Image 1 (tube, one colour):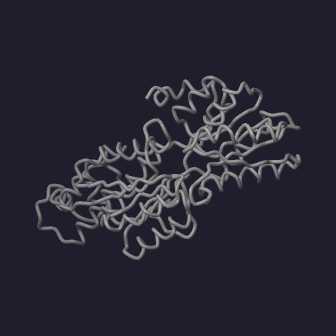
Image 2 (cartoon, one colour):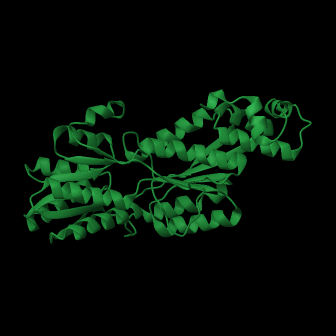
Image 3 (spheres, one colour):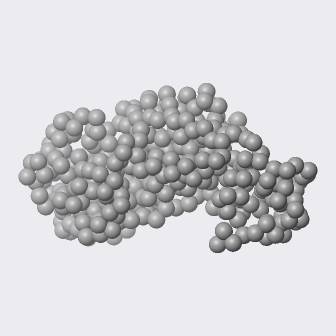
Length: 355
């Protein structure tokens, strides 16, 4: 559809002559600023990639985007987000964009603070934020707001901030989905456990809070009186996590379903398998390499997938549009589709599975 847009269509949208549009596209000068602005807005609204890039080149501007997300490892959730970001940057490679990274340990609040504190020193034109900790994110956003630096969120919504755009799942809905799946997969008398991650700084991740709230809402709405018990695992110390998981299950022998409210479901699944514990259904998040392995061998029953590649890809495109045209997004919060992946439909995700 976008490729069918012609110069005369852009001219009509902008209220100028076709010759004016041609001069702007080919940087020939002799164009008023008002006409240039009108044409650039029309180009942006068409979404025609070539025209957007030509317009940017004609302005001879350069931009610096800082990517502030948890450490990205291939085969894990944030590695997939980063792949989407890099894909978008490749598509817009003829715009002069410098990209810098402010990675942080998502299980360490102090690492997040140090990373976020370094961002302003990088002098960004815009920032893309993968928010884990609420207070640290709000502080960063207030600094960016005071300097007029636009920012986009990936993966999470933080109340009290003003991002140009957000791409994330509905975490409360994700929690309700987990609750429904566990209710379907387990006996009515089975106990339900929730596992989160132990974090340095003792602050629960924003998404985990939203998921937990949704799960509690679901079980509250059906009124079956199930007791939900909580525990934590340490990503940094697998041996200690194994001991914690076994101790928890020894103390709660009636548990028939476990929700792991992050991408580390495989830690619980592998522990149960190594101890010969069967009959417990596990639901976790994100199509990581390890979680896919556990779906394949049956130790995880289902995975909630949040389209991380698309989140990263679209966030970059949106922030570039903001930088080029200073246009306010019509839809500031884009809620991503949520996939429920089980062993039977895992092959349909073969492209991701075989990476």
